[in-house]
Amino acid sequence: MQLASNEVAAPPPSTTTRSGLFHMPLFRPGTEVTQNGQREIVSHVILRRRELMVYLQGHEDPVKPDRLHLAPSLFTTERSPQPLTWFL
Image 1: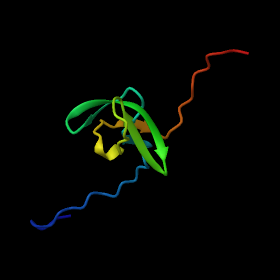
Image 2: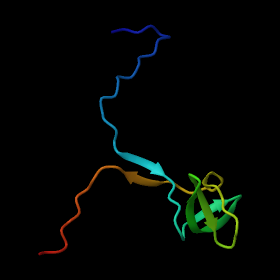
Image 3: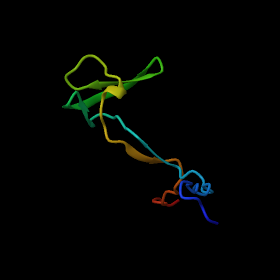
């Protein structure tokens, strides 16, 4: 099949299923985050009125996670069998 010089071929539709992998920041105690260019450490995390609130060490007020910078962690939704480590 020939294309005119100004036409672009569309990529074939993807037939692969979702990979089950996704990236998401993981806030947990002891994690280093960046806020306004300063490095901070997460003290604890709570869910309040359907909102995630992150508390930093040395600060009394909570911070919304969208104001913090943290490299996302890789997660999977696929099950992986755990090796049997005990016997009956």
